[in-house]
Image 1 (tube, rainbow, N blue to C red):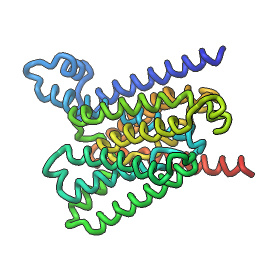
Image 2 (cartoon, helix red, strand yellow; image 1 turned 90 degrees about the vertical axis):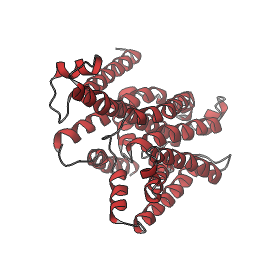
Image 3 (cartoon, rainbow, N blue to C red; image 1 turned 60 degrees about the vertical axis):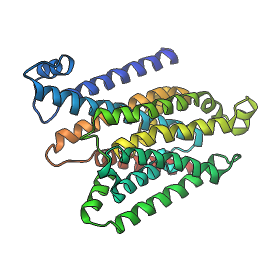
Image 4 (cartoon, rainbow, N blue to C red; image 1 turned 60 degrees about the horizontal axis):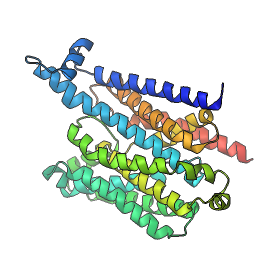
Length: 335
């Protein structure tokens, strides 16, 4: 079997798995609706079934769509950052975007803006992510390489984490602190089509920018000097990778909270299946990230539907052991 055929089969398989999990996300929930009843309410509505229509169109549909979009954003951005930074431990949080988006959301909760204006929280989170990009570029400079970007991102992430801790420390009441903590654990519950509409444009632009970095990532496997000799503009690749990640992951964090490990785990699981060409890893990681997040959200509903188990907790329980294994594997390879 040729490599192109294996890659096509991989994408087909991932697409089918993602589609199946998306359907399951629509049809499974604590309401206990029958499949035929659920599909009829979702597709056709109908008088006398207002409660079922409300559950399907206003609760389950936006949750499933956001699971698909957020997972794809995290998986795709993780694959691009690992390729650009040439660091197997790279993920969106490494360059400060997730932490800064979380800081923006925390400030919206802390100041009371989130209570006064429902869209203030996601908009502040997006602003935090975009501000992180500006700060990273300002610190790294125009000629800064991948290592400089990593160091700048760690500095921004550490500062954002410290400011979030400060907000928790100075929280005016325990209810505000609890709301901040719960939001930072990540969740797709209680989201609406308004959240989908807010995040979708930013994610779409981010996906396009990240996809445009594919050719440069392929050339970077030969090293920065060789890539430059092939005509690849490294500054452009950096711009596409960092700004695309900021838009996609910033929008994801804005509507779903901080969800970790998806961008780290998925590219590593799929890289052996796509070969040594980073551009092929991008669509595979987007589909894999969507599948992993949809599966994790289903686990949230099925494991403890009455305890409000947070999505970020489930992804951390899956990702943390993998992260430890990856560190040990990397250590063995360097000995």
